[in-house]
Length: 378
Image 1 (cartoon, rainbow, N blue to C red):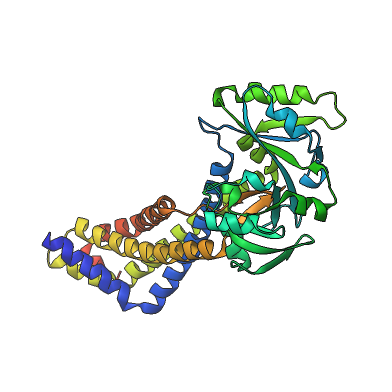
Image 2 (image 1 turned 120 degrees about the vertical axis):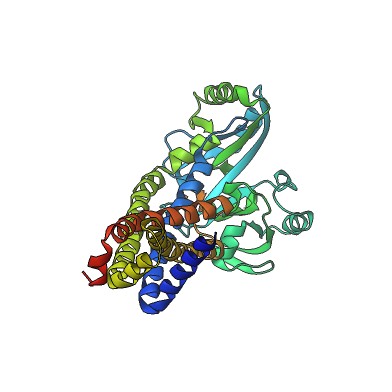
């Protein structure tokens, strides 16, 4: 135990002896871990938004052949017919109005819904009362509010719509954190879509029959001028976020490249540190520190460098994602960057592993160098 404390103290001392080299290494590691954490947050957010789980009971009814919410127009009267389909628990007609139909980080999505369809699972009773009290009121998701700097009582204008923030959304649903709920009639007026909606959000009473209910809804309107295509909500998000899926897949390769860069930065620094003090390590060997102890000393240095840089990078990523409220939005559906304690711990564990791996070769070289050769500086 005493030897271990001595080795740890020596490792800290060696790291502190060269502040410029240590600082640059920590900065390089921090940049790599920042990128890796952001990419992994994006990936986790996509998984949460698209991965089906037992108990999913929500369907989305869209117009068949649509390629953007602005091209999906269904008669509002369809809602009454859907409500009597066996297995349907509730139907919410929704009109989606977007600031842009392209995939982006700052797309504003207004969801116009009837006044009586929002309950306490969406917002507090006070916020709901304020929203119901005026036609131009909005309930804004927390991610959108942070990104645009919105507060209750402020005016907000986007996509040709001007309204007032009546409250913030409290729902933990990923798709509710980056939207603004408005009154259906108000959005219909702005979009010039009286009597029409973009989609119907359907909840079924038995998740095991979700495919059966979807088929029944589509069969009901197959002969209409505006036929429908009904899919589970998670599958609908996955289909709409096709571009995002490709982007995230590529971004994960970028994250792996960042991890490789961290490995190279730490390995290079530790190797330089070992070669610059060959004689010091030889003296340690002479006074009784064996090859194993010297190897552990070098491994500790790499671990300290990696852990310090990783902590800085992960903390910077967490603060940036929390304050920025970033999300990728495609066709009005959002993939919120998911930052949580599990991701932070995973990123820090990756830093520890990279720091140790980067130090293996320098540690092996230091422990294998003959004492006499080291004392001569060779």
